[in-house]
Length: 556
Image 1 (cartoon, rainbow, N blue to C red):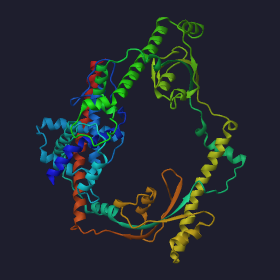
Image 2: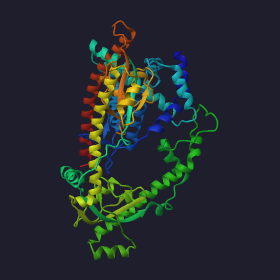
Image 3: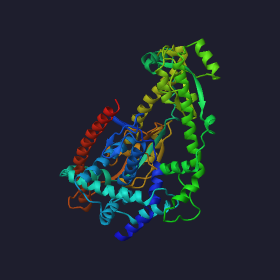
Image 4: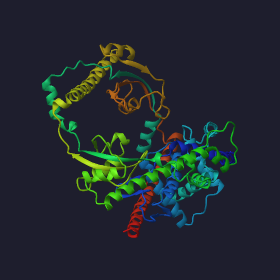
């Protein structure tokens, strides 16, 4: 079995993880509370060393976070949020650094195999490694792949070493019996439930508001209608397309660009099964036109920013002022301005894609500092010219009356919707107690409100029906057999659910039970790791502060 796992993973990891990377790539520009962000290098050549990774280098950061993303996906069996990934990437790098400090040798093939068998990505519902599940996953990804076997081997070997460090730093992992029982009851209780669903959109409580009620709602909620500060600017546009023909990249430059960013250019799926042996030259040839176009767009964008920056510098050098002097200057350079509709700091100008960078720059302008630097846009670059700053103001009711009326009706409707849930729950409980079936009770209790009833086959928390709403699952924590929940709403607020627990069977809680022992050991491992995470977190914070201080000293 172990030999099979090793051979299979060695042959197919490149295919599997390429899809993971391509499907989950996000821009890794982070901030950490009071700690410095990742990937924002100064214009000077500054090195912000973090355990061998230069945080001022986008390539270094991409490699560190890219490896962490693969690792986290395998460790947790799902993608994690950007904030969680950021913390995980930092702590993983710290763990690997201390593996070097403690002279922990590279993982052996046997250690890597054992590590693979513990990955949640391929767990069965009982937590055991499932060869069939892995094989089915592998077959579904055969036609995709851009990650080299060397990259995969490196991530796995590093994770195995990092795991040894975490175990060395781990605490004792004490577990109380009550913790285990709570977890078992949550995970393994068998439920047989029915739900009665109310459609919020179809619910019409017949609300008609008087002018006095609308005025009162407007007065009580005036903050909701305050128009935030806005700015009005003109701009000179430098479209990147006008620079696309300049400085065309050579074949060597196109290949160099591809080698530096292979993940940006996934190869189209081949018509037949791909060769196990990587072929970098064939991969490049398959996407060469896209690479050339991307490099040319990038260069055109840089040229547009340079042209915009040159304009801003010429305005500074020429001591150009607002009014006639500016008009004459722009005319002499054959440049024309266009106007943007006033926009807020948060929304940005819709004409330029709602760019927050442009909004920030615009709000930094005034009558004295009336033009911006060259600012990149999706299509090139712009220079902004300040016209007017508009302060926040409270509109008159007449100006926003339709919105106020709609908001007031929705607010009152939601309150009545909650009251309806209380009424329906009481009516359902009463009819069920009298011996009626849930279907009949729901039909009669709803009255003029339609209740859609659905019954689910028995399930546990670990094996939920795919079509059940998580709001209904959440209601189970407060239900006993035969009980009806309070009305809970779906995440989007469009549906209200009343959950009826037709049956509830608790699992065995005997400490000698195999499931009890398994969950107890898993909890112990989790509690033990808490100590290592805490220590690695302190190490991470200390190193980030050190690297930030060093960078500031190098770049005063």
